[in-house]
Length: 425
Image (cartoon, rainbow, N blue to C red; front, top):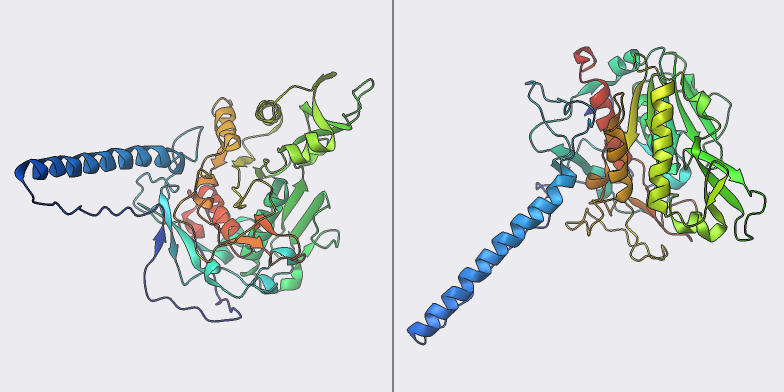
């Protein structure tokens, strides 16, 4: 956990007098009443009860086996699981619960100039503040506690780069706001080109002038190149994704100290086939290629680029997994944001995109750290933007409010970066 030197004020006070945690739905089994009409009936009903209990135990164990493998994926696919607790024993941060924590939120979004207005849900009229008060608690360890001033000093002279879609930009905004709580002269933190934080700008860079480091974001929603319509292509083809070529701005990612990738939200038919975008490898159109196959091909291209281009003696490479959404149906038109985290993830803890990331990274020849946030985020149907954006007529159950879930992603990121830096705690 990151510690701060000031308290964060909200528009309302929220107090809690009980401990609550969300990890999986509690199951209660009642004992059926046994009608003592005769011994045969008694024996029969006893067998029914025993059979029911055995069925329940079997179902519970199967469910336990089904859910936990996703929740307890090791962060480091290459190498060992990271150690976070002070005793030095190995602990899997992903095996845990969401718990109420009055130390949260970690900052006030309205006071951070780098939060998009559309993500500041409280400012946009959300009346309940409960969603701000949840932290992720690993089962057998705690997040390291970091001093923000020491963390700012550790980042001196470094360059942190986020590459991906709008979810990556949200995490970028979150990290900047977390670090700004330790900066006295807020004006010394600025966007290098004077740009406002908007959705369409391909590059955003925020410099912490007093500490001589930058945190940058590159918008690359597919990581690979988007191309124009090839000659002699069918009329339905308006553009292509060149799966064997990384984005043409990738040369600007190289000289970074910390490099965090993410892609996934745009790999859907509505943002591909329905607008005439198809896949291309070399000079060949792949009209029949499925999205999962194309995603795997693109990630293989990314992995090859990382292995050939990145100096691992300088750069720590991360890949963050897919972020689950919580739409009420497949049309993405109905968005019911809950007041609290849900007990049942309804399969959202699994993602073929996240599985593909693990499959690709485990075969790489250099170390890449996978930030597997899919499972933990699947419980947080309460933390989406919903109708509290800068465009309330368009509901949003994909993006996250700030402060919120992306702050926890950054706590995990910092835990990895600073596990061997005890002086920063």
